[in-house]
Image (tube, rainbow, N blue to C red; front, side, top):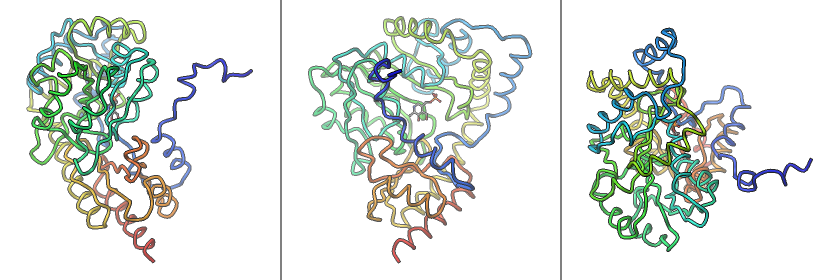
Length: 394
Ligand code: PLP
């Protein structure tokens, strides 16, 4: 059968994720040391897991409300009141999703339509452009540069806007660069967004993971922005719950009414046990001053400082990433681009990092190194990178 003619051309022609592509190569190699994966090395704190396990044992194994357990939505609302200072009504402005991933997909499908242009600052997480394309809208990359610490620059944003531009993705702390945009940075792009009446997809999944005295600000908290912003977040990263697949989406009711229909038809509801675990994650954390999250963050911070200092000492220039758990060094000094460097390093030293090109063309000369690994693993990998660089010079 000629499957090619049967498949949706947009889905058929989507590029596979550059991260996955690279890991398929790495997975075939024995004893490979990976600094590639974008998920916490920590196990979900036991108190959170117990609540999920107990919910199953107590027989809470049915669907929940489509939008998620109301007590979880109330907890998310209370949490966001404190964390970002923006209030969302638990009954009508919050939906619990299958990770931030489902939230992103539903948000794009709710807003984007054929003919629309959606601005996607790059380098960025791999899913935005393909998911936008699936809606029939066109993702338009906006280049973020190391000179500007990979922040979204107001002039670059303005220059990318056309009469077709409907929305912009704002994703800080950023995967893959570790760059952040603090309040004063967001205040520079907000007037452009307001002037052109754009919507904002704000991916805040790494919001809790900022370091070095930085403070996370949601763009939704800026004047005039709440009404045009869809906040996407979840429990995967800061709460070390990737496998539970729990996230949430928040926006004004007219948007959520549409997101609700998409979520209801596609998903029904997020997994019930995971919702109970997430509820415990918020209740326990709000009760103990976010002890579990703070402890993990302190460990990431220690690894971050070690990694960045060593990369710079090795001549792999790395600006100071102040969020998420990634460093994004430039490898141009080796005469290779990120893909060549990652392949050669894997070949020579069995160490896996991700080529920056997986996150957009603007990441071409970089590699992403995750520090969601133990200090020992990071040290061993860097010793090998040091040997690799020394051998290159011979
Ligand atoms: N957004 C960003 C920037 C990410 O890096 C990831 C996962 O790596 C996600 C969203 C998806 O997170 P979730 O596990 O909540 O689906």
